[in-house]
Amino acid sequence: MTTAEQVTHRAEDRFRATTLHDAMPPVDYDRLPPGPSWPALLQTIAMFRFRHTFVPWMHRKYGDVFTVRLLPGSRPLVLHARPEHAKEIFAGDPEVFHAGKGNAVLGPVMGEHSLLLQDGAEHRRARRLLMPAFNGAALHGYEELVAEVARDEVDRWVPGESFRALERMNALTLEVILRVVFGVTDETRLARLRPRVNRTVDINPVILLGWAMPRLQRLGPWRRTVANQVELDRLMYAEIDERRAAPDLAERTDVLSRLIRIDEEGDTLADTELRDQLVTLLLAGHETTASALSWALFELGRDREQLARARKAAAEDDRTWLEAVLKESMRLHPVIPMVVRTLMAPATVGGREYPVGTTVGPSIILAHASAENHPDPEAFRPGRFLELHGNRVGPAANTWIPFGGGVRRCIGAGFSLMEGVAVLREVLSRYDVVAVEDDEPRVRNITSVPRHGARVVVR
Ligand code: HEM
Image 1 (cartoon, rainbow, N blue to C red):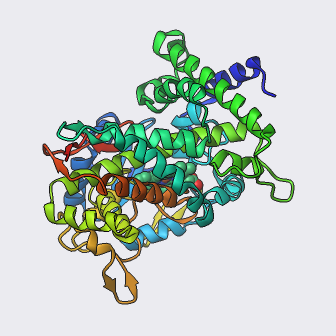
Image 2 (cartoon, protein in one colour; image 1 turned 30 degrees about the horizontal axis):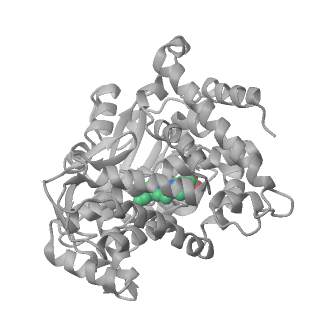
């Protein structure tokens, strides 16, 4: 049983414990591939605000491997455009190629046990304990509930009225997290959770970065952030306590119940770990899937031929085609721009040796926009995921990488595809979709989303 005092202390400790400046040795830029020499602040702003133009511009200017300088502390990030480099980075020794470091800024919200923040043996253990809730059989068990949530949402749409697909998809994927991941069904409890969760997912990088300056913490926005976290945690710990004691725990199919049941030779997840992993799944799985889905509706909405093909697939429950629609949307509009690994020891990528402290990563934006990887890259053509190339169906290995790769590959990849297919099926079996204005990517928090929200009309 978690007491109110424990909840408050744990939340405050999370914020206090966050350090953004790791004791990484300075890296000599002369040993790294070329890149802009502007101040790190400018490059950081360009990467976070304008990455969809800045990254392709650097690629044109400097070639397939280039260096960006980022805050805090002017740290080097070496981006790679080639699939063979992506392959090497994904296969890099996880003791050397750390992924958690780059996510430290999310510590106050996700917590130290978060899968996204851990590395080495701790990461291996957490991944082993979480994996059974994301395997094929578990995913199959979530499908019906996801379809039900999607039907409820689509039922409320008014034909002929335009709306932002992103807004509706955000509401939908949030509901999926609450019901399918947290396993909450009680309406009163859902009503209490929704505003807390909404405020949590709307994480503002400035607030998170400001946490490194203790004097700021007394000010309103920071105080409110902690207060919201304490309240969310209180609800989550209460849910965990109750779920542990639930008489139907053995039959429940939601992610939390599965995680509570896991007992691998006596190793299970403690309450604090469950809380951290649930918030991680919430933050990692909500807006990412919503963005991918809203781009899919947007692309179908401006291509009558593809829409007709997808509606036929929905009517026939042809999941392979609907999945190809989603995959092609994620290719054309990468939700996450890159994958990053920080080197804990010198390592080689593409025949070049990098010193300790360098962050290396494949650029998802460049991999997906390359004509060599995907012929006619600007075109929305789901069929490319079903074409045979030699003995492989779809694009070559490491050319389509929206979920990263290797031991850190997105644990929710299968979940988001299952969810996306279920949602597209519900929408398209009922409606024609028309995009009402053009759109372009914009960076929101960490993900790229349609700037105008992918405005559509359904008929
Ligand atoms: C379109 C939807 C999604 C996209 C584009 C996406 C993308 C990514 C990417 C690029 C990574 C980093 C992989 C790497 O470092 O190699 C990642 C990691 C992760 N994702 Fe997703 N994701 C999506 C949906 C989800 C969902 C639905 C969940 C959970 C329900 C989820 C949970 C996670 C977690 C926990 C990690 C950390 C894995 C680890 O470090 O071991 N994601 N995701």
